[in-house]
Picture 1: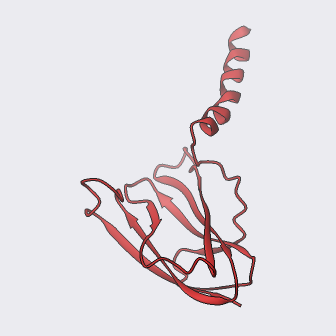
Picture 2: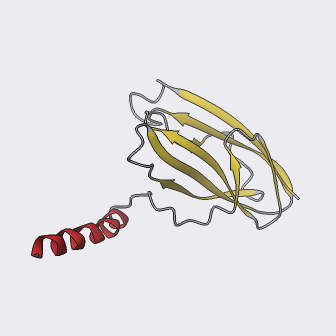
Length: 138
């Protein structure tokens, strides 16, 4: 009888351990208005929270980062990244990725992102998938 109680206690501690380890598989961020990753033009209001969303597969190359030229920080600022784990019962489900931003003052800017196998180190040039988004705050 003690084993099920111990197992339940251990499973209950897993989210706390992941949070303490800095794991971003939380799903706790406010994503605001969600735009699909293939939407290249985004229009939002000043102060609005918005995000770009990717449905991920279980493959390398899901390391989306902002790259130069950087967006005008008075128009759009990066809030954070939220990765939500996939359904482990479905092979290949890598979960969801949300890059969350906040709109600033009225204006427009370009938001350049790159998906690289690893954005640093010896492998940084092995795989890239650059994308540019036009963000208008009005």
